[in-house]
Image (cartoon, rainbow, N blue to C red; front, side, top):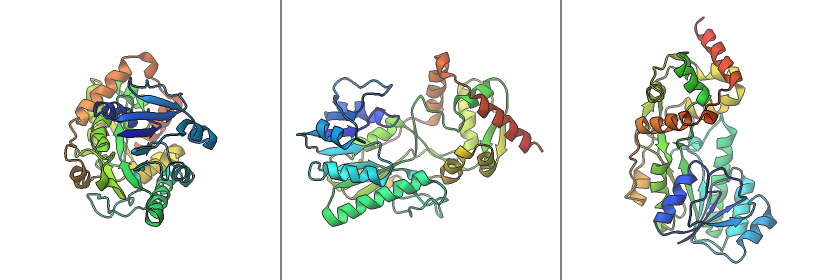
Length: 325
């Protein structure tokens, strides 16, 4: 297969790229060449800016594709650009949506692909829903061959799973209390990017995936208390947890509010039956107990990665003071 990744060097796509190569896919990346992540040997790079129509057209001239994956589409303008560029030139257009597009909070669990799309809290998610609706309309009217993929919380060794990033780990290592959203018992799903890639690559060129949507997540479910405990254990310490309602956290740090109320504050359990039917070899094999050690070891290996945000650290102290009243 001849496949184009638009982007292709992010947290999720960086695992999909090498796996695609091992599967014998003739893989091209369209990007501006600004990524900090190295491009694997064997990938063909087209230098162009997908946000600049002339630049993209020049880079893509003369090419047709078995599949195109847009890793960096977030608005309907982005989707319309993709339709304009690739209609009649690809057998499949894969849009990376988000599991946060599902009904929030969900009325029933587990979440399936037929769960209503509705997120009143987060504009990011509503934009993804609008993108999906545009693709469905293009398929119904002109048979534009879309596939929608909805990742949930997918991570690699660089990404800590909570707001505040390494600042939280440093508090743990210093013996200071850390803030956990809600009462710590809501259930969350974390998926290692190498596991996500197994399901994702199997959808490329898959005729059964045209006009369909899939989420690709782990079957491991953890409470937020367990997630903090696993990260602390990976750092060789104990997590001194203080529970603070998500609404209160959002008042202290307004830029976190939409992502908390529109995503992390709600239990998320997914039924992965559909992706397993489409890609029978899909199986997640990296539990977060291993992933947490990978993340912590990566951060501790280089002092430059151990960045503490003094503002956020101070806000955590204020939240903990609020909780103690």
